[in-house]
Image (tube, one colour):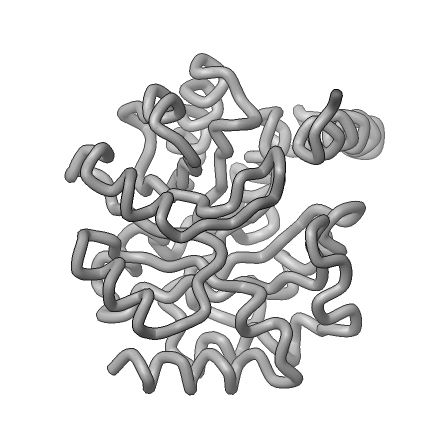
Amino acid sequence: MSTILDKIIANKKIEISKHKEEISLQELENKVKEVTQKFSFKESLQKSSTGIISEFKRRSPSKDWIFKEAKIEEVIPYYSKGGASAISVLTDFDFFGGNLNDLKEASLLTNTPLLRKDFMVDEYQIYQAKLYGASAILLIAAALTIEETKNLAKKAKELGLDVLLEIHNEQELDHINEYVDVVGVNNRNLKTFVTDVQVSFQLVEKIPNEFVKISESGISSSQTVKELQQVGYQGFLMGENFMKTSNPGEALEQFIKELR
């Protein structure tokens, strides 16, 4: 029986094929040569006292629409103003309501490092991420083989992008390699979409300390962030908590005030 993740990955491969028909990999490679990298996702997390990575997300497979009418220009600048150390932008349309133009528009509105949040299965997507203004890409261990993870991470580093590797269990620790900058523990199981923050507490000591560690999903209280900081996490990816409000930027600012 196929999982939600299986469906997303199958859909993603069809989507990439269509993109390649519109713009070839060679064309993308040529365009990317003119793009300069300005901001480091990893360094921003290391320098931040809060480590909040606020996410622009209109919907999710588990919750359906969270903020259907959300506009990049009404959220991204205010995330930066509110104190986000980085911003995650969903670029998957069918399951999350995002697109690459969201990333491009966000890159024109902020100097805060941007993470392209998507299901990366082809190096073509890494060139897209670079071209549209990302500072980092997400690689999801559950969606890749160990070899695929390493090859994609290496390509990202060649293009000057930071790499966030997402894991959910001890078996996926084997996906960590020398091209990874940040290791994120997703508290949400992408096969069942069940969320449990305890996953972060269970895995933190198993991740080598040379990597920046972040906790993702299911975080809604400043107290939880403080507890995760105490065990070694430097970053916290939060989307739904802010996007479910009428003013995500204001919600982020208030959350950071509680943290301090």
